[in-house]
Amino acid sequence: MDARMWKGESAAPENRPFFVCPGAKVHVHPTSALHHSRRSASNGVEIVTFNEKIKTSQVFLREATLVSPCTLLLFAADIEVRHHKNQVCVDNWILLHASAKTAVIFKELRKELNIALERKLREPEWDFHADPFIAVVVELLARAN
Image 1: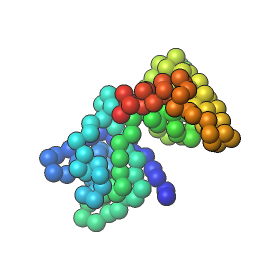
Image 2 (image 1 turned 60 degrees about the vertical axis):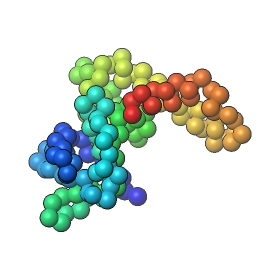
Image 3 (image 1 turned 180 degrees about the vertical axis):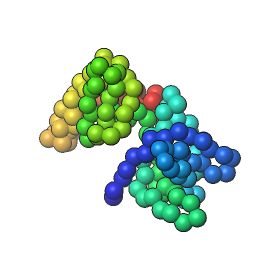
Image 4 (image 1 turned 90 degrees about the vertical axis):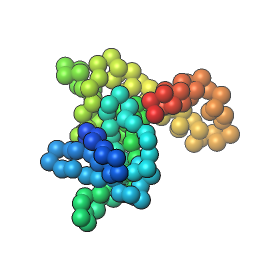
């Protein structure tokens, strides 16, 4: 699956949700769960993941969903902290505004999460639900989404 992300401004008329991105306006395809969702963006930031972009009468995103910046910072392939600009660059193209301190905290959370996931792979019987760190990550994701 070739999932991609699109960051944009939401401008959803009643029957046809869409996102405005630099130089483009894309609609959420009616078969996508996001089309019928009442979910709103986290802190006004909308990042859409999608599997397919098609053009018929309009440009549509299929198999689309919103993800929070928190989720993106924890699970994206790479994040670069730009201390002097108060930015985090995700996967070399998505820019999020965050203090350097917040960005560094997320980098550390990612390291610890990777350690926990690697442990779970090595020790499938390990009850990660009982781990206090995992409980914090789960709570963080629940509040962000």
